Length: 196
Image 1 (cartoon, rainbow, N blue to C red):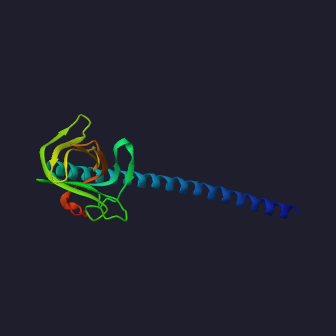
Image 2: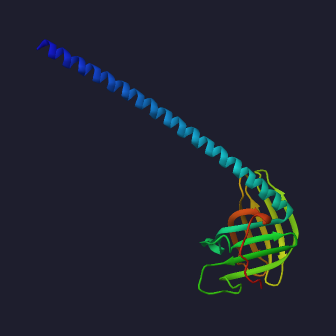
């Protein structure tokens, strides 16, 4: 009986020791996995920062060169009404001596440009680029053409290619503000409708 009791006691001691070793190994594996996850997140964050700085550099150069496209994903109308739109058909572009503003909605009506909205082109003048103390780059210009006479202001925020453009017509108060990403005109494609 004593032998049986000793064997059971030794077996229980061995299995308790094994369980403790297994628990310690499991805890160590969890710590290593957590550290690996932190390292991976840190690497992804650094990679994103590098990508954003490259996008910002390309956008800033294209803004200074007057060869850019803002692909809009949001449009804000007068009184704050917002609309989410398609980036391929809603844009503001400038290619040296020609500026284009296109607003198109996904509707069943073709609109004046054939794709559900309006496309206007004009010649930019009084073009100037400035930088404020926070690092925001702002391009301002007047655009005059057949269907447009407006003041356009483009702001590129530091650290990425996110931008905002405000179009203020000279003859009415139908101001629109577009939010989107600014790209060099050579690195993007947009679908342009028929201009007025």
